[in-house]
Amino acid sequence: MHAPPTGVTAALPPQQSAPAGQPGAEPSPEAPHPVPWWAWTLAGGLFVLYAALSLRTHARLHSHSFDLAIFEQAVRSYAVGRLPVSEVKGPDFPVLGDHFSPVLAVLAPLYRIFPSARTLLVAQAALVAVSVLPLTLWARRTLGDAAAVVIGLCYGLSWGIANAIGFDFHEWAFAVPLLACSLAALGSGRLRAAVCWALPLVLVKEDLGLTVAAIGGLIAWRGGRGGRRLGIALAVTGAAWTLLAMTVVLPALSPSGSYFYASFLGGGGGGAAAGAEAGGGFGDLLFKATIGLVTPDIKVATLLTVLAPTLFLALRSPLVLVAVPGLLWRGISDYPAHWGTGYHYSLTVMPIVFAAFVDALARRGTTTAGLRRYLAGAAGVCLLLLPVHSLGQLGRPDFWRTDPRVAVAQRLMDRIPDGATVQASDGLVPHLANRTSVSLHGWADSRADPEWIIVDTEVAPERRWPLSLIDESIALGRARSEGYRTVAQEDGFVLLNRPS
Picture 1: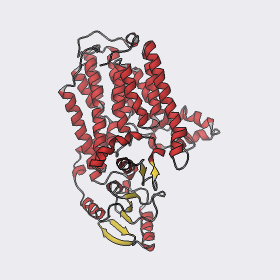
Picture 2 (picture 1 turned 120 degrees about the vertical axis):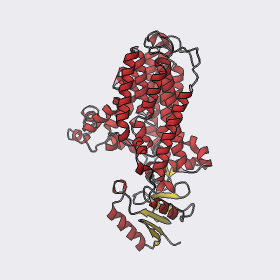
Picture 3 (picture 1 turned 45 degrees about the horizontal axis):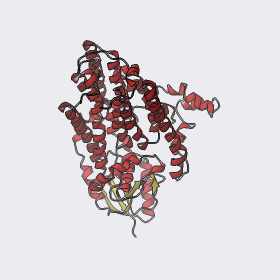
Picture 4 (picture 1 turned 180 degrees about the horizontal axis):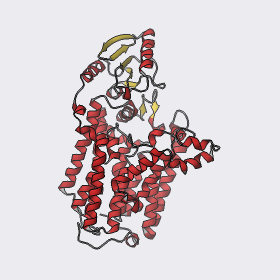
């Protein structure tokens, strides 16, 4: 453990004097803290749950072109020594012009050995599972073993993590352990370690530079004279990188010559539209940053759901401020999916609010009885939310039941040769991305005139995208009229080939 820089100790929040392993105990910088067996067991158990959920979802053909196949095509490019491109985004689309996430190259050696979407899913499960360790060990040092176990379980089974694991792979998986390590170090007064863990976040995604800046701001605030310089340097680096990435790097690499996701902050739907009536421009932005943050109601519901697993005690720690940049851009976005609790958008919030939870409990000098009440309440909220989010699927018999149509789909996809150009239904694209040049059937930017087309005409209505059943039928009829021949048609799957 690193010793805090000069002047840091006095700036850190006071804690009760208590025996090591008891609530309010002050960490000892000199004493080693080996990882206990139960912490490894906890992380290992969570890894198994995450991997089971991801791999089973993929095996059922419920994974997606957006986003699993996009990331797999990027990693596949790195694995063969090329800059990342994604056929799903468009013919030879440069992924670094969409989101700046060079950290994906870390997976290239593993993917080269195991070229499959499953490699990304297992890697994500491992990255998220290991993030429980820094938070649990920090809680153990300050609150005791029993509290650490409960906090680790509540964090690992929290709804934000569950929903992210249940929806494909995302580059944010790399951010989760980095955030957990950085905030645990910051809460323990190890400011240089906090900086070292925070800096790599700028390589995960362009907007995370603002999160880095928030961590830097806290270090500057809590760290005395030495920490102030360190924190300011980190804050400036993070903010400057996000500005540079969004205004220079991404536009330079994007085929459109602009940062596409900036359009989400322009005029749009939902509650933000009401602000446009006031005049648009600055007025629209002002509306979004004020009234627009709490309208429509789903934004407030999401914020309450983010804080509920910690019984809102996270609000008593300044560490919760690290979540502000991420929650703010979601609140002012015009894209409705950003407002709710679905998909992966709350993945990086979970380590922040649970770090704030640990910090709040330690700062309060909570009595043993009070600590037990807080932990029981947190566990109760976790158990209440668990069945209604993605991990709850693991307890449903139908999740483990194999649809005979899956074998049909695999058999027909096996008839498509390696290296072929393909358009496929959304759920089939990730199963072809490791060996073909595959794009999404019915997507306007997909490569025209592929050699093969494979479509699931009987996909469940809630998973049908981007074409309706009628539009899909029209598209298949058009393809046949343009010379594609039907190679196979079985159990709702249609395989077409364009004669050479």
